[in-house]
Length: 215
Image (tube, rainbow, N blue to C red; front, side, top):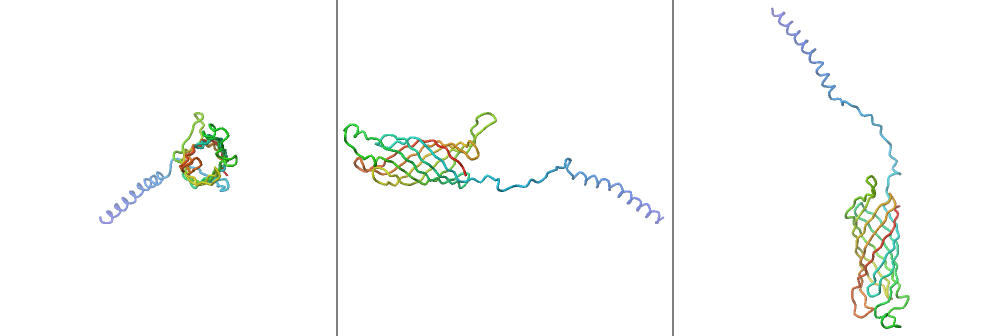
């Protein structure tokens, strides 16, 4: 009787193992994804990665020279982009001062000589991209844009002297392509001058547009 009981117990174990094996196999099959991806790694050529951090450009506009009328201003800029937000800019501009109201009323009186009316400034600035975004030309075509603030210091050669100058302003950049951009900008230039009497701070407003290339 004991042998018969052992025989039945062993047969029961074998039957249970046989029933459980398909369940385990099905659980293993369930772990596999229904759709297996067929991904082929694509080699990357690092020489093709866009890494242009330098930007060179030219601009033209108008400069209001306090007490000496407005003048056409033109010049150039060299920019180095530290990151997507910050950049350094070195700039130079050229203009020519007009006559003061006193010179116009007095007739032959000249406050400045022709050479002293030449106006040249150069500065180094730090810029910050405040509002990067997009400008849509059509529903499916857009340009990358940046609205930025900029400020810095330099010097202005004007009225027979070189004057320490601080400038500050804002600009709007539109990237036409990956390497070409258009700029619109407004700057204020501040320096001390005493040509017409007591020394004062001259505030000169510049409005300009330009074209630049990344390299």
